[in-house]
Length: 403
Ligand SMILES: Cc1ncc(COP(=O)(O)O)c(C=O)c1O
Picture 1 (cartoon, protein in one colour):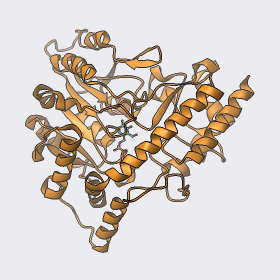
Picture 2 (cartoon, helix red, strand yellow):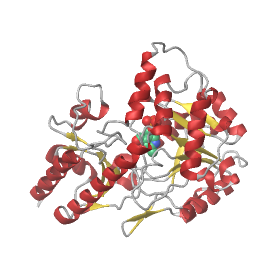
Picture 3 (spheres, rainbow, N blue to C red):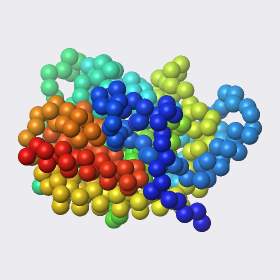
């Protein structure tokens, strides 16, 4: 057994690392602790490094085949879905992509026409907005409800999004798609089976395709279980696209390797047709890392999740006892915690400036996630505890200074 020590701090500066090397220009401060973009300041599992090392000993990096042609990668994906969720997927459903965001852009392009609407649930991961609007579509905002500190889906509003508005061509349904985030970034909810069934019935009943981004599906706090949307029923399976990747779970975002699971053959061929010429398959090292992570990464993952549980509990206690004006939304999954800062009484812009320049902690500002994010900040806790402690102390001092 390998025991990992996640307390060790390794500098990532000067490695063309977005999180650290862009922090000064992004936040306008030299001495800033970056806790924004969703990657980890924690080294990867040993089996991943070993597999990459072995592959680089074979000094050829020519064109690769899509993952469907590699039995061992297909097996790794199939086995993981079965092991984690008892979900049986067929080899031909597996589609290789070089990242989920580019895949989402392609998906919207494939299944909508400009002028259509796509549902999302604000506040939500900001590239979802871009994937919709940059394809000439409109966001139909099924904003989440915050009820006593707990985010819920507003099913009445979801159903209302499908009600006819003035249509140019009456027979064309305007809302063609819903992009679901499960677990939800940034509010940290892991949607339950019941919630998914209610939501899915409304969306699919209205002939929308559900694109379920499940990139955070394995990042769960104790007591929570991720349910792939498509695994709920054959009907859900046939009307959805599931996005998975080892990139969040195993810290491999720079290797750009992700998978779409598209059980419906018509949807799959439309996606493949649309991607031609601009969405390549994942790169060769990304595929090696994916296979190693899915097959042999669990020992590391278990220890990492324990560490995140500890960081999360430490942060919640810290805010509760020392910075009570900022409320932590109880997280169920992801390593991105959602901070309700509305009691500080700052405008969204002033709050951003406060975090950047007074606290000198580089957070993702809530308004970037949509109007429902105003007054909130998102903090990434996938770092060693000493970094987290330093950041919390800075926020504490800055808040004290406000009083
Ligand atoms: C919900 C969600 N989807 C997708 C991504 C990014 O995926 P990729 O790097 O594969 O484009 C992120 C990254 O934070 C995310 O939170």
